[in-house]
Structure formats: C-alpha cells, structure tokens
Length: 210
Image (cartoon, rainbow, N blue to C red; front, side):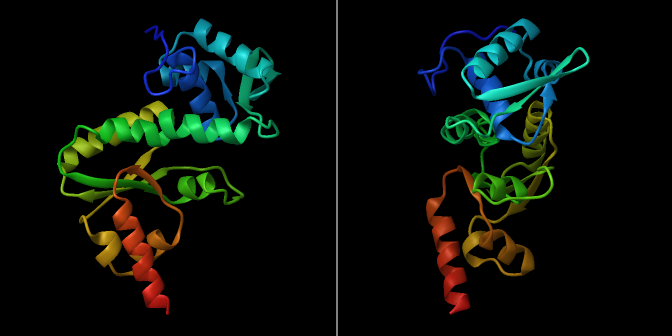
C-alpha cells in the first residue's frame, strides 16, 4: 500500500513512508536488517524502501553494507543527526508511537508506560545485548483481550514480541513488592498520559528510601 503525503504529526517530512522507514531503523541502532525485512514488516513497497534508504544514507543518517546480494542497513550512530532524529521520529512513529496509536481507542486505559531494557536504552543506558521483547505496563481496567490483540499487531510491525503487564490505576503510587520497586526505580517511557502517577511514584520511593 502506497502511503504518500506528509504525515499529519510531523508535516516537515516529505511522506509517511519516509518517517516510518527512518523510525524503524533508528528505533534499534544495534539492529542490522535487510531491505526485505523492512518491506515485510512495514508493508511498504520495496522500491519505496530502496528510495528512502538511498536518501537517508546520502544524508548521513544510516549506513549500509552488502553481504552477497543482500543490502543490510542500520543507523549511523556516529552522525550528528542521529540522536535528535531518533528522539523525534521514534517517539512519534517508533515503538511509543505505535503503542499509543494501538491503545488510543481502548476504553479503560488510564496510562501506559514502556519499561525494561527498551526504556533503559532510550534513556541512554548502555547494554551488552540487543533489546529483545518490549515490556509494557498498562494501568487501568481495559478489556484485556483488546489489549492483547493490539500488542500482538504492534509486535508484528516492530519485529519484536510485546509483553504487557496490567496493574490498577494507582499502582505506581500505591504498589508494593519487588516488581513494583524495580519498575519505578528504572527508566520508564510514557506512552499515554499520566505524569502525576509517575511523579507520585518517584516521590513515594524517595520517601521510602529516606
């Protein structure tokens, strides 16, 4: 399916295809993938993938190499454009953006966060292994079947399994136990709004430590 025209969320870019390709590559700078991988997962025609990869490599945003007849691409982390482009595009069209879109129409969700290794890398923590599954925390009382369907579809699009944990709305603030303490003490990336809950949880942890 050809997707043309500037994306409404970020109209400074030429087309939605452009931002989806860049967001996918920049989302995991350690992942090297073929053009066929991008075509299969994003549902964008191979010719369009090739065109966007050529432009991005010419601009110094990504780099590529050939193994036989296969062209492998990955983010060029040495580029001065890498970090600002990653922050902008991945939040809007990468894992956070795809989860936000998937959950937006599901009733009963009060907040959604990404935690675990993906969130830690997003916040700049170094790791020795590539990011595996995406860990997602859903606060509220949604229809769980709808959530499972949504995360399955997102997982297919991003090429990773999405693991979801359900907790009550006030769990970040009022929760207890080792899992709670681990989650609130590590980086979390907000997908759907609930700033106060995160701030309250941080304040609660600080009080407990004092």
